[in-house]
Length: 282
Image 1 (tube, rainbow, N blue to C red):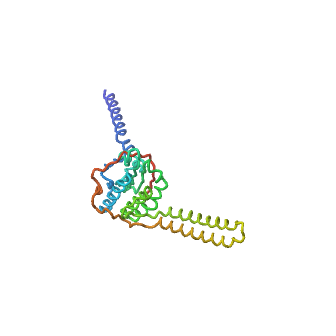
Image 2: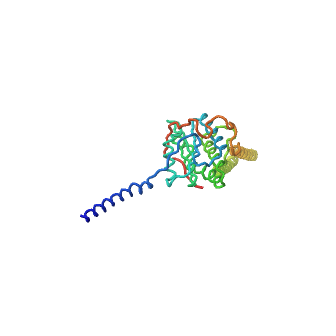
Image 3: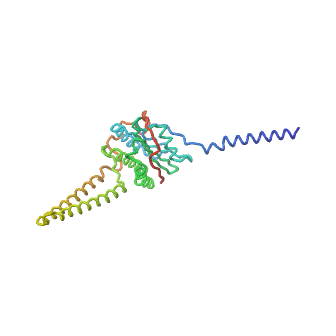
């Protein structure tokens, strides 16, 4: 009798132990980082930004949305809790629905403080102007260097500015940082130089191929002058495109109005995301 009782007790104990392992042991593997509430255009749950930076960024992003209907949100969190940033970011995008329904013109700059991870998540409608490579350029050239210096305000401010300038080059806002993207400038300089050299060669060859030798000298001189003028105009145009139009911070609207860095009833407009963007770490 005692043997039967002991056998049943062992079976029951084993079943309870197995159930406990399933309930508590498997839960962490499938756990997901909680989605924070969308409290404004700047959701700084990671406590990384100063009050002034949040105010300025909120005012900028509100003015930008009013001018273009595009929505950009900055989100910082303390930790991803072992979840991949790409997975968390798309869950966040699906929950917040940044951007307008039908336009899908939203973007999220996400930063996980303790994991030292970052991601730019791009809505369907903006993938043509900020593709994965360009999003990666912004992280690599702007956000990561500033974060490695411990300058979170500048990193976020200039990254948001770079996103806006790529999406809406004609958007004007007093104090909007004009970020120098090294990769863009180098590529532009190389192609500009090659194009100018090609133009010089074609113009000179055209002059040499003239039927009248009597006009050869005059045609050659005129062509060289045209080539020099073209090169000067190209250089001037390039310098104007890359000119710094603002400082590292924001001016303009100051601290008034807007959503004040959080609160105020801000919400997404129903925008959709498909996983486009780029991730990085500092």
